[in-house]
Every structure is written in structure tokens, then in C-alpha cells.
Length: 197
View 1: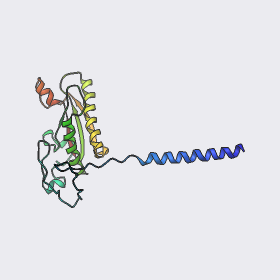
View 2 (view 1 turned 90 degrees about the vertical axis):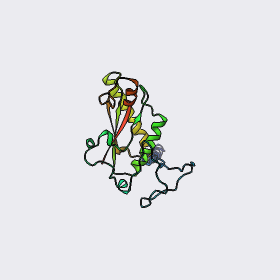
View 3 (view 1 turned 45 degrees about the horizontal axis):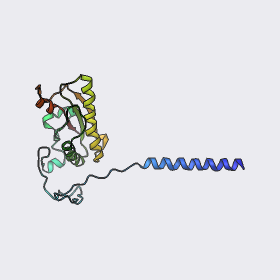
View 4 (view 1 turned 180 degrees about the horizontal axis):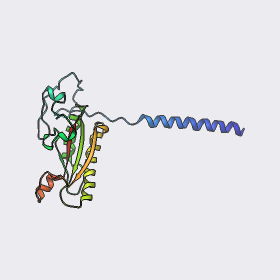
């Protein structure tokens, strides 16, 4: 009787282990990023062959490109270092002093970046975290990395593949503005997006 019970218990344990393993492999699917119309309604899904149904609204971080842009011609070729800060098609996002939390404006910019990246599957991006000159080198390197990771994590949550996004921190070593006032410090607290193929 004990032997029969042990076999049933062993069989139950094996079955339970298989069920747990299969459940762990399933993973959680991310919802797709959906475009909305100005009225807040969901826009119809577009296929790769169809042009957009509505023209793109241009703004400080989005510019419309012709058909050559859809092929990736708006990205400089070569190594990631060949793309300068001024030539990136993705706008920088700013941070508050001593914070790595995304602002509402940064989230809105990242949502546009996610749509742009989803249309260009061969593009990779390096998120560069930057800080102002205040604080130690080590502190700012850590803060810059936290800022870059916050942007990367948000882009991944919007459906951009994590394998396409690399993070790096420059801390306070590469200021955008060499000034020593609040305006310069605010411009230097940023994430920059360097794109490459």
C-alpha cells in the first residue's frame, strides 16, 4: 500500500512540475501600441503596404518624412558613433533635478519614439543618460544610468524590443550646455537617443 501511494505521489509531482514549467514558458504578451484619432477613438490598424490614413502632425519631436524615411533613409549609416547628437531623429527627454522619474512630457515623447521605432524594425537605439555638473562623478554616473533605464523600460513597455535598446551613462561628462546656471543645468539633465542599424 505504501509503495502504491509513493508512485501516485511521484506521478502527481511530475505532472505538477510539467504544468508549472509550461505555464512559465507562456509569458505575458504586451498589448500593442494603438494610435488614436484626435477625438480619442482607436485608429484602424494599418498594414505595411498601406500609407497612413491621416497626415502626421509635426511638432518639436516629430517630423514627417517621405517614402525614403519609411525605408530608414532618415538614419545616418555607419557605426553608432557616426550619428551626432544634433542628427538624431529622436528628441531628447528632460529630467527634474536629482530625479530619474519620467515626467508626463517625457512619457509623451517616448510614446512617439516607440511608434517611430516600431515602424523601423532594423533600427537600434542607445539611450544615453546625462546629468548636470552638480554632484560627484560616481553619483552622476549612477543617476544617468537610472535615467537611461527608465526610458528603456518605458519603451519596452510600449512594445519596442528590449534587445534593440542599449543604455549607457555619461553622467556629467558630456554636457549639452557648458553654462553654470539653472538653465544650463536643466538642459543637461536629459536622455539622448543615438540611433544605428
